Image (cartoon, rainbow, N blue to C red; front, side, top):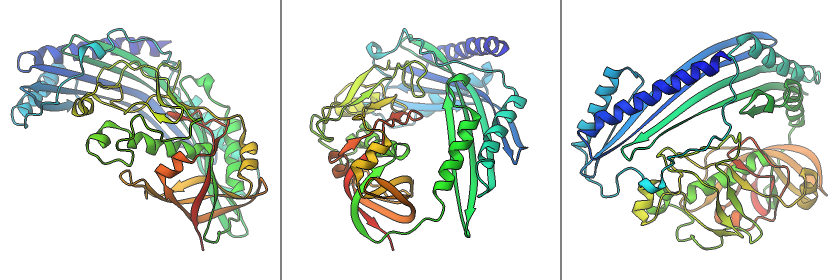
Length: 446
């Protein structure tokens, strides 16, 4: 495959660029770290079967950070020729002369670095063929349009295929790189009935083309979701049990990520301050992180500071086991980096066995949330208030769609009082969990 040869050549050139930058930085700094990334890909879209857009892209950038007498300077460049790299290094060195000293600044400790990065099977490229992408996008869109006569319009089908190279090196002698690929296919349509118009979408994603669902599944799932939203009703203001569907339940734990991130902790700007070693979830809940999951969408051998990633319990039996720390945050807190510079890596939150239908039975009568809107969440107090839409359920059966409502609570209480988690696990996210049942939330309606 031609693309594999091209990537191998690009990877070698990028590693050389990192080595050059580190060598140039050596003379004027106490320590340095360099990261280079390059992404190449294609994006195509169709509308009513006609080609709407075909876009090839190739983007790359080098970033260097130098440290001099506890002062930090950073610079970046999208030009990777030797002269541009030299200018970028010099810019970082110049900046470091004028910044304030910070005793916590510096690269990650040498004993935490991934000098021998594992192969996580992340690289499954395909030749960037526009015709093939157009065919897949059109098939997904057509499957949506053909599903029901109430589907009257379309925002199109889309196909994306990208591969990337990441290289990291620092003055501790680390120089590691890895390649990855990502392919996705989606459809988005509009349905109309009795003057009401609703839109929704569906998508599939994978490291390899063969890991994705078929275009027909994407189109039919898109149609099903869109049709289910037709003729929504409003609810009266009340308190009721709430079931977060798996695709939005991941967002609940996304707020947890922010709350236990080192920067939030040392700034004392989290509702979970002083919660390390304390219960924050029900005793039956454990959150595991698996950075080395083969083909994982959030897998990585090392974080953006070169720290090796490793499997760990974030929460065990409901108890918070660790903060999420970069090197800087760790030093501020007197701890060690946990390899979370750049984010989290494949959180797994196990369900309790019930599929979505079983979770509806547990819900009984209440609200299923399938979409959230707005940013009404405070990471400092945990106060939670967001626009929502979904379905009203009675006796474990969906009765009708609902929209234009607001749900409210406090994240600390919401997390601690989770009743159950389903086995309908969302696998397309860096947080993998099923639907989440809460005993009660405030629902503001008409």
